[in-house]
Amino acid sequence: MNNLDGDKDFDERIIHCALCGREIAHTEAWPHVDGDSNLGVKKIDYFCSEEHKAEFFGS
Image (cartoon, rainbow, N blue to C red; front, side, top):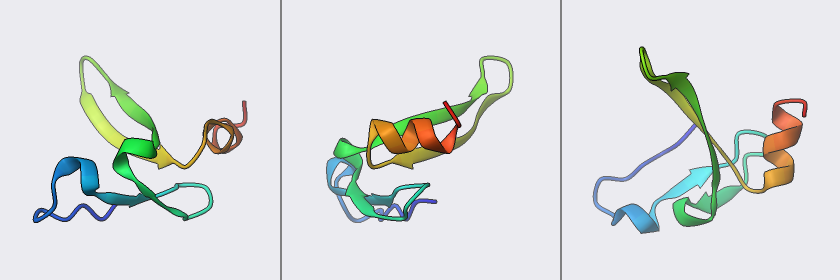
């Protein structure tokens, strides 16, 4: 989930961690891109930490 605001600079945008919902700056997020080179990007999940990213995907 993200709530990108077109009036803000890209670096100032606030997004939410997919696991805990915490608000984080786009520049501080750990993104995960779902997709491939044939189909393109389907979804981007953002996380507040590398640990939350690993926990979300069960690693």
